[in-house]
Amino acid sequence: MPLELVTLPALSDNYTYLLHDSDTGATACIDVPDAKPILDALAERGWALTEIWLTHHHHDHIGGVEDLLKVHDAKVTGATADRHRLPPLNREVGDGDRFEFGGEMVDVLDVSGHTVGHIAFALPSSGYVFTADSLMALGCGRLFEGTAAQMWGSLQKLVALAPETLVCSGHEYTQANARFAITIDPDNADLKARIDRISSLRERNEPTVPSKLSEEVATNPFLRAADPAIQAKLDMIGAEPVDVFAEIRARKDRF
Image (cartoon, helix red, strand yellow):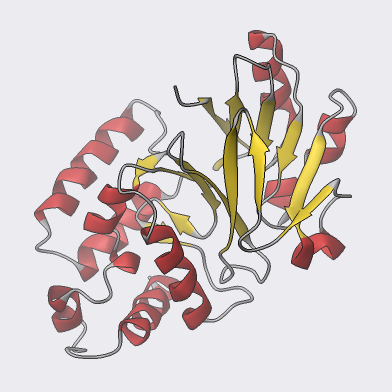
């Protein structure tokens, strides 16, 4: 059985996640925008937090770590490349590293682009990947530190995961991303249907994440730079996908 996954809204538009193994009681939190919703969720379920996994150094992903550690004695994992701007780490990891949690292996992927040193955590057995601000629902993170080539390479690593993988991203940006996506891929029937579902979820104030990787591949324009229809829309037929991706990212930045 997959590890239990809990999606928690935090701050104005962030998400944090809890992973729980009922056999051992091990519980991990992925990114800590704010300690309060995590502490409340742990108390409600009677869980003790044993691990914290950090994807990157931005304050809205690590700002609650200190307060969380005042209550729970948890091991903190983060990227070696980012350790100089993360809270103190008990375990440093990098691309290709693996560690065990809840009876299964966690794969670490370097997904630099949004920042340099951004990592993702993939759990193939449970079918989860925690991508924070790399691959997002119908989008990807802005290139604050990395290059378009870095982000495109990072997205290709994530696309290589199993299609049924649930993409656990870091923000509720999906509706805004959808408004942009339809300008790039206006004839995509799957995208139109997804936009309708997103609207229904947000009308009920329900999260649009996690999303299924196969759905991202079918509808997320940042993953579809090789698609002839998108290339035609951008007047870039035959261009290298990384160059098409860079154009899509630039257009989103101006949108």
